[in-house]
Image (cartoon, rainbow, N blue to C red; front, top):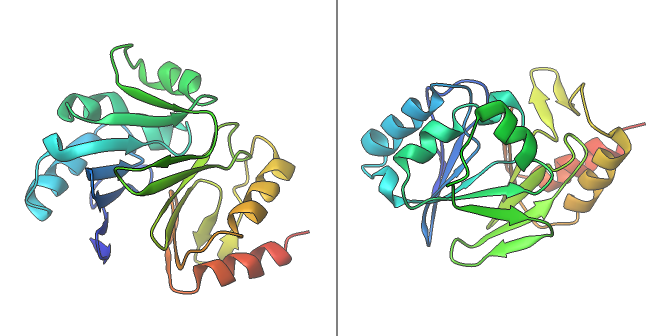
Length: 205
């Protein structure tokens, strides 16, 4: 599903919203989903984008929950040229969930990092999990599990590692410039997303 130029939402994976960015370095996949989701991603890339998983340069994991990462090892088997991007505080739990091997090419995030060849800024946004990260591409922010947007509106996830830390992360990313917001779970926002995030944060007690 084309969301806006160069940004797609995978149709058919399970557990989370999985996004694909057509970047300067190749395809960038953001979050994967439950076991079996790798097949839906592969099918989407090949049939909808008329491309190949050989063209995937990065797989970004925003947080280490089962519904976002379980299909990761099988996806990486299809992506021989991909580098896994993950925070250092999530790598342990992801390996525990997925039984991922040691032969994976990994970019360990221990500070805010600009991935120059892809044009993506990685921002550390702990709170939902210890090593949650967000990814900024142009005017689009991929916020992982830090926000849920459902039929009843915006909310923070019910289960968090540290609520205070999460709110601090939300206030920090609200200082960035973006117009669209793409969470790992729930609905996405295209247009005035930063203003809506500020309004949401101001109403949190």
